[in-house]
Image (cartoon, rainbow, N blue to C red; front, side, top):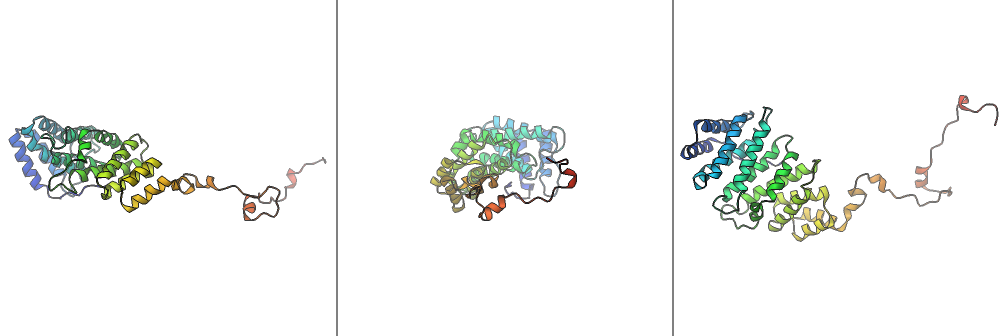
Length: 313
């Protein structure tokens, strides 16, 4: 999976976060949890975050999101910390309740970043970008790729996702920011879907990918995501819609092959030997060529004496 690169230095994030928590009125236990999670993000630590600290972070996100303008200032360091924890693979460890704490944190982060319309006062572009980066980096967790597909499907059905691709982002967001984070989510979801047994979200992912590709046909991550989804199971109509988006040349070649049906033969299907044509020679023709020689049963050796019939007849 693609992990969004982040800066290794967490000192500045820790300082701003503790200052925001103090102004927000957080308790000493919550400040302690924030500091411990910042230490888990440091490079080379290799230690999973404590379950109680992750649960405290999820509660802080819920409280800050419900606090309106008063809690908007603390949401940025909390979401930033969440995405850094996912990138460092510090979530979902072997401790009891680790996966449940990760579910709480993921739900709280997406609710605060995608809970309302993009551009509104309660969901600025920064919150949306950080929440989607957190979701994209969660695919780096071992054995979580397939389990995250329903969460991605729910994110695609929010109003915020639809407004994401039609919004005119102010600087410094053009070419990056929320749209780049959403493309990373689609890319990681498409990679997980290729080896997943549960593919109910394939249709929704492909539709969302093609719609996004119409808005940003030059985005490499979107092209890779749509290509993976077409390879998993794309129809001729899907290939036509991708061609209409005028994608990059590699994706254009794949979509064109699917639209023309070039992948419906032996090379594009399972069990290619089953597609070998039958021999055109007649069964009684003894002048057959190489094809008849391949189908003729090889000569058998002499029957052993003990298996021969005795007594005549």
